[in-house]
Amino acid sequence: MRTTKVDGSSWSTEEKNSFRTTIHSFFREHARTFPWRETTNPYHILVSEIMLQQTQTERVEGKYERFLETFPDVSALAGADLNSLLGLWQGLGYNRRAIALKAIAEKVLNEFQGRLPETENELVALPGIGKATAGAILAFAFNKPAVFIETNIRRVFIHFFFQDQVDIKDAQILPLVEKTLDRKDPRQWYYALMDYGAMLKKHVPNPNKKSAHYARQARFEGSNRQLRGMILKKLVGDGPLGEKELLQALEKDPEQIIKNLVDLEKEGFISRIAGFVKIA
Image (cartoon, rainbow, N blue to C red; front, side, top):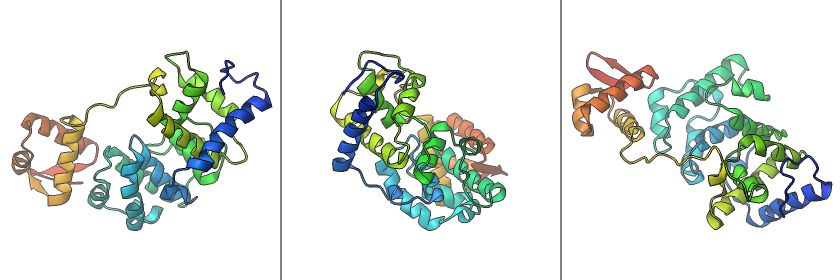
């Protein structure tokens, strides 16, 4: 099923239903199972969506349930010490997300009586939440017909509707997402879209390379991101260390380590006092 009416403005009901049938039929046969799909608890959905930002589902599966066992609700996460939080986050990467998640919990506890807000404007005002994450939370936690795009959804729409185009902007795709949205059950519809997109990744040349927003993830090995992770892992595991001791232990460029220590301190990850470094 393909169409040249890529703005969706003149689609017939039959055309929209045909597209939905294709996606739903695949989902009925090949739906993936994840622990965050077995709940509608808004806090649990929040945790999963922040973890899933730029991170493969396989890595999140190994952390999600343990995280919720340690921090079962907003109050527990808001009161978490950073050392415990970062220790649990090890292996997920992008440690800023852990700090953002704790900041979200604090704000939700203090400003929303511990209940995650149910509007896009309120959600995007929280740390670390953009429109895509807000849309996912609204759909999966509250079953609201929010319109959003993430990588698998983008892949599906480019594959079906932009076969002969390149440099496709999300602004071109969003009207199609809105036109085809199953407003009766957006939660299941988005799960189905994501699973179809995950299938396409394995079986066709990546349609997302045609996206104007496509960018290859930077190499992790030897990157500054890897060095930041090494610093935090060492401090979480060994506790406060002298700067000289830390430099010797990491066996990396001392100037680069010091630069990262300065940045990590500014960002609230660590504190440096009298030549010693520790998790803030």
